[in-house]
Length: 393
Ligand SMILES: Cc1ncc(COP(=O)(O)O)c(C=O)c1O
Image (cartoon, rainbow, N blue to C red):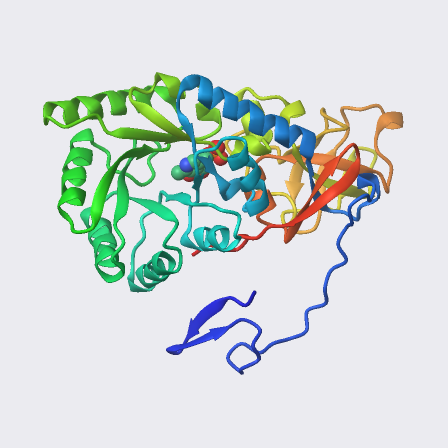
């Protein structure tokens, strides 16, 4: 589908050959086909073990149901509508997106996403124009948003005036992450009041994404007290994160959770979240293209195939499934550098061997691929385009 872009006041589309963005012929890639053996796939390739993915979806759905919180899955991990549809079919109560462009892709997929939460400050005339267009184009979709300032809320109110659509707006709270969000419970109450006074807006509740339990519990305890003190009903509370699932039930008043990474897991959720490498559904398969020294192996997956983020872990860049003691210590663009000195020389991989790497951060790794493979019992079952890849606006 051609994507609309603005240029010099005109609306045009990528690849239309109108001189603004000249069209060129793009050689189509040969994709894997259902039934292909995973071990024969050209590398680097990101493969999802479907049995593990489905087990992860079932586990977290049941977990949220046991806690009595709605499971509003975050699609940023896979950006693939077909996977979100499986999560919703398993019981998820709607989807979370981080960008309007992701909402557009998921709405247009036709897979029935009727309840979309976008917890990000939307600002600026161009963005708000797109938001109007989205609301007018999808009258059946309930899109709820967040703000952490009156400026954002006022912009959203202008959108409701133009479209005649009301919007539910939550207040983003920074309960200790040091990112966006009001930092004081009192500010959350004040902003809730501003939202309610603005035409077309209703207050949804409090939204937070925080790494640790203690500050989240402290913030929400204080926020609920402030709302109570003002004679207001307890607001809904939506929290997020996969590692945070371990403690989310301690947060007073929590009604919803937004996990994303759990669908595939990664080295971070294993090392910091208590999951196991056996839960990791997404791996990058990579070929050993060189063994320049006795210890070193060079992989054909560099920083354009595996995220170079270290994620505050141990400085290594991934877990090599077949060689768990090996150290993936560096990624240049097209080369991964692994140290196999923990193994006897006779056990070390040979040139041409294919290895599977669990990346530190699966979400940004998936975002590097045009498509990824879903496999079962060693064979390709499906190839998914990463449909919302690149939708950074
Ligand atoms: C606002 C928000 N909600 C939910 C999530 C999901 O977190 P995770 O991928 O750790 O499950 C994130 C992750 O960045 C986020 O930023």
